[in-house]
Amino acid sequence: MIRTLATLGAVFWAAQASAVTCEKLTHEDKRYTICEVDAANEDLRLFLNDHDGVLLGHFSSVNDALNSDDKRLAFAMNAGMYHDDRSPVGHYVENGQEQMRVIPNAGPGNFGLLPNGVFCIRDGRADVFETLEYVDQAPECRFATQSGPMLVINGELHPRFLLDSTSRYVRNGVGTSDDGTRAVFAISDGYVTFHEFGSLFRDVLNTPNALFFDGNISRMYDRASNRSDVGFSLGPIVGVVEDAPRN
Image (cartoon, rainbow, N blue to C red; front, side):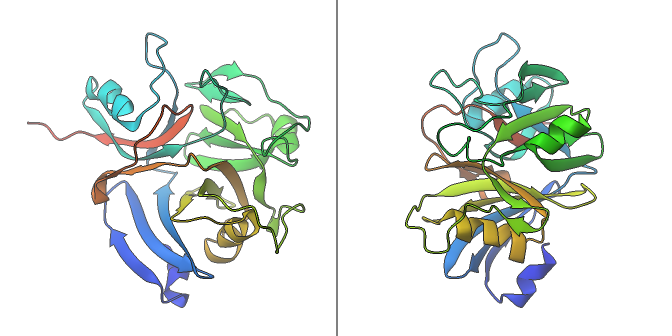
């Protein structure tokens, strides 16, 4: 349970699950779905292709791939920007294998709106790093995905976010705690600005570092609430894996 929600008096629904806790909340008249993961104990992974190198692209395909190991998704969402062929735009690591290098320089679009960042999953923790800090520290990530822009950087909103921005999209992202034990994922239920979305992570979710995954194409899967957003194929997907029940 995200304790700060009690101060809002705006919890509409809570889904109870062993691996993930998801809730709906309203902040500054904008509605969101929030899913908190115990990164120290849960099986948090990134997915792109199957064992034969074929793009997964959908939550259902990830579940099909996990089924052979008697596993299944408890939660998932899209996890970073991708090219037309669904390959990652930025740094990507899966099962310790780097598939795309770090992109440290500015560029077009939201990804290149520096500072951007990297979501890194290690044994017992998950962290959002600003990209240059990630390069400097060189953490040994079992999984990593680069996206941008950063939403919150050491407790401060991205310096380019405008309070009066008119750019509004459905957006999703992730924030992490200082000790790496909390990974908090959020997706807006309607159109929000970067400033509104970043403020959610800074002021409500209490995550000192948070990263934007994408906008407009944002989708989420939550087994406990029977939510599985559908659409065209995605690139990188982040998910929590749990044991499937035995028949």
